[in-house]
Image 1 (cartoon, rainbow, N blue to C red):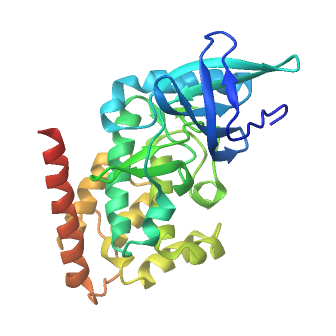
Image 2 (image 1 turned 180 degrees about the vertical axis):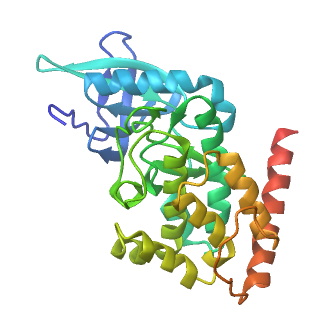
Length: 300
């Protein structure tokens, strides 16, 4: 991005139009379309993103439009937009909620492989209201999500890839892009996100193997079938890879059926191996029950 503002820790940024002051604490994210800093202002900590004027306008409009699905924690709360002027150059930015938690890929480092299914369930909970609002995530990758709170809620920290359904996906990462795997187009539709969610789940368990298989769908399916953990949900993961789901809630429903030991509605034609099934199933069901009671307690 041209003319990107490079802030330094301790620097105080003065909003040109609001007059609000924000002290830069540290950089927390950087990408092709902007850089994000943790800042402190009169309201406390927040996240400040510098980006081009068109990106700021697009992303702030997206955050505002997601107000009605906020109950599902789709992303950060929008706070305000402003500019910083330095040496006669204007640098647009916007302020959003700072989400405290662990990056998704970091969170998984300390967890058993079976946690990939818990993450998938939470991710589907995140996607359902977003899809119902007529949008898709688009650039769905671990780096864009944080696991927040004791209920392990999935929150998005980069909403720049969100696209209205029916349009062409505006941002994507090849490893999670179905077009790169020759399994569909880049049309913004729920099935696009659900494909990416399946790849993400596989990558949480076998990242290097997925990277090595990039673009070869048959090799990706072989990874599922050769993994003792992923085989438990093989029919669901493969259905998503083949575009058989257009609803996150339907995919979640069939995933839970599959993990319970019953046959999902869409069945794999290949015989499933049973090694490790019940020990792993016990762990997953225990975690699901735990998360249910934690969520219930928070609602009371």
